Image 1 (cartoon, rainbow, N blue to C red):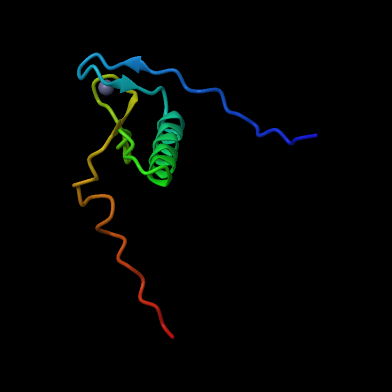
Image 2: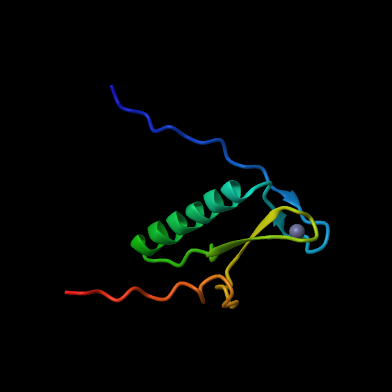
Length: 90
Ligand SMILES: [Zn+2]
């Protein structure tokens, strides 16, 4: 008997009142969508074409209180400035 993969129910997006973008209800859902986009890019690359899915980051929205995904990498230095690369000691 073939082992079945547990499948998570796909999160259902609503629409942001300000931007009109897809709005995910929570961070977890937005991250799940990022994983799907990553998988899409991976398999598209294997098949020799380019996936239209470019989302790389999730962010919370002040207007709707939900989460959106974006293809723009983070430009803010606030979250990573306090985390310098650890120096490896041989
Ligand atoms: Zn929004």
